[in-house]
Figure: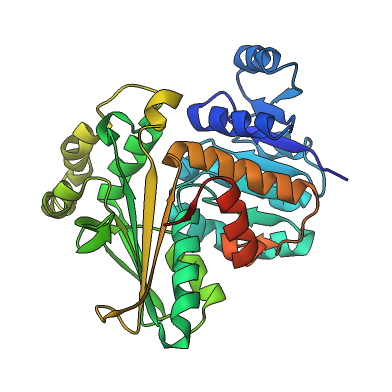
Length: 367
């Protein structure tokens, strides 16, 4: 039996991509949001979908629309602001939960608040199940499997090519701006440590060329040790704009110093405001097709040691991939495919082999 899938945030940019992916799979979700007019119009344009008006800030309002074993997808962010009541409603109902967050702090707090409750109710809760950060988790898992028990460290780099400056959504720009003012967690000596974002710069080989990337947050540091308990070190990097990696390192140091001054928050807002420049929404299908993704994972015996294994995954545009991944996972959960309850990562939920096969079906493959 297939459970009901509810998509919260379908009228937004990322939600629209998830809806398109679900409809291509033949899935007709219930769409939810707080704007009755926009929901009604989208439901009609999508062939007469069921729709419900709910406020993401009120878990009781959402809870009455969720049944045990149903699937809730939410793309409503910022998740630190709107995500917790939605997650609470799913955990209490025993409904499976998926989101598109790139906010690692939210994921850490989600685990602390709702992991035990989700295990009690049987809810599988999969935060950040999109380009942030499924490809990195999968690439790292494959590299660690290939390297074997001698691997105790893994570095992950996210890259993309094409006209990327024009291909970043408004939501991503907001997340990037916030990320410059927040620390990035790393796994070091089996412990999580927070470091200044962009404080580290590393070079990866991508398509035969050496490219720089800077330290960022990633849920890989949270979830990979669940599958690989001997893993001592996990570090995540972003190389979307390789030439800017070292300047951004200096820029983040300036922002960090500004935050320690009186009225530092307002100064940091001014310094990071250029990151927000750009049009609303996100890239259309034609532009997304010109910006494929590339993720690298390098496993080694220790940080900085010679590589034991290196895995490259190439695939669709980051936004397109996010929509497809959320739809794929929702479909599996809705049909009762086995997955581990609680707030878990992609490989813990589905297993490395199933995740690899699912990603390959979506076009994310080893290079």
